[in-house]
Length: 560
Image 1 (cartoon, rainbow, N blue to C red):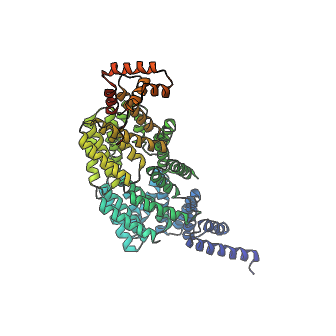
Image 2 (tube, rainbow, N blue to C red):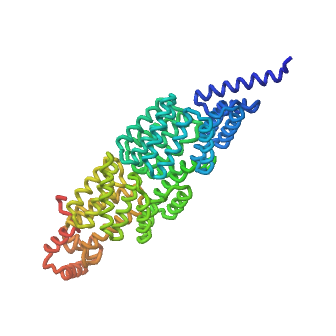
Image 3 (tube, one colour):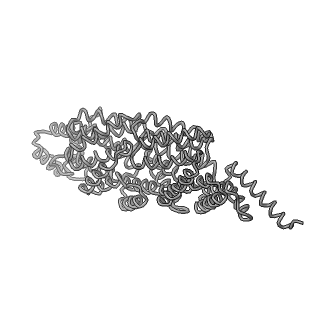
């Protein structure tokens, strides 16, 4: 006769197992983990259920438990002679290790998966999945052509075996490889195709999360702001629909921080970047934390919080995220011109792919002009223009227009500079990017000043100053205020502050008595100031003094 306790335990285990499988279907990841873990504690699950438990563990952030379940499933499959399933588990262990930056373990597990499949001469869908890390490795090595070949082969295998997750991963990989080869239109089309499969729910949640993050990253590479915003919103909605899911939220937060920063919501952007940093830190730090640190550093740099920025750039470096070009721009803001120039030249020699290189070239132009290397700035701006020509991107065109205008201004071609700068300013305004638009306004002001149009220059500088003040862009605000002070000092010429105050009132039609009353001084003192003004400026009369004040922008005419 069966032991009643054993029967009850068996029934409870079966109920937990069934419930866990159903919870997975409902995307109730925490419940699935609890139920499958309960079943596993009674008796070890079969390999396929261990894989399900590993998925649930991964999606609630229990990575160590996920890896343990996959390793157990791998060993159990080997002992049962199921080499194909054992290879599948090894493959997922390898890809998880790769995502966590554990490259040696990743290589070991993927090599084991390849050996198991090749030794058994298995013709199976797992052969296609093995091509995915190979393609990713090729992209990281700068060999986009080989990467594209790997992903095309993977897609063909996925189609042959009817595996939508593999096909979607491969389409995404093909798209990114094509973008790296300069075929942005074809690449984006494939990315959109991959995203359609994700939003339609055709793929596993782990593949869906990976594709979301990769496609949004690709949109950033090609400066496709519209797509980046659209897919980031979709990722945010997808994450929100699964409240107990832990992965992928950090990536969403970093992208949101970038978009918020562009639109001038800097406090919100910093909060989001800091949340992303925390999300990537738990339960164990992930490679994505480098991107979060970089975004934090950028926001601190723009706000003039240089010590915090430098610390965050260095932390980004520790997590394999290059701190450039931001760190070079930080050195420039700190007045370390030689160090900034050396840093940006080095990274320009290293970064070759178009999307990343365009960001470097933008910073290169600014730094080269700061050290008066106009020839280098011209070459960088020309290359940036060529890259922009290969993308249908208003954002990249705005970056290129501003860089070209800055170089033309340095070359004293103010007419051409103004045309390029006004076009760039218009694009930034359309993109609702207040900081970038205000920086272009400063250049427009300098060009107007070169043409002798001081009033227009002052209007542009005042407008930019208001934006920088609202954003908290302390370094830019200080620069604009210095430019405005220099304009006032230049207009006043050799006059003292008090003499300027008297001249302004003379030009406004004030009598000596009225001026004395307004300034709280004697009429005799006013007369002496007027005499000094006539002498210093070599003017014969009050009428001439009035004309001087209007000509030098100390007083505006009623029509302006």
